[in-house]
Image (cartoon, rainbow, N blue to C red):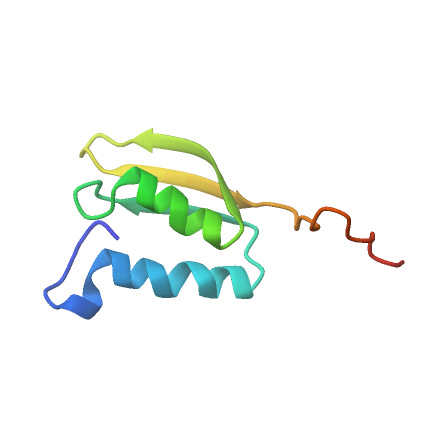
Length: 87
């Protein structure tokens, strides 16, 4: 996501909104996302990942100034008072 072509459908936020949910649906357990903070603020990246069930475990600033975020899937949580799943 560090190299952005022209056009609104190629914008990193649009790509992120399509890519992260598809990774979650496919059951991908861990992701590394490389991006420019000018295109997607770090807090926005964390929010995108969180909404799809990922928890950010590491953020690294690379030598070119871009960021690498490593995130893993969180275990599903139950609603308060919900019964445990049956075995």
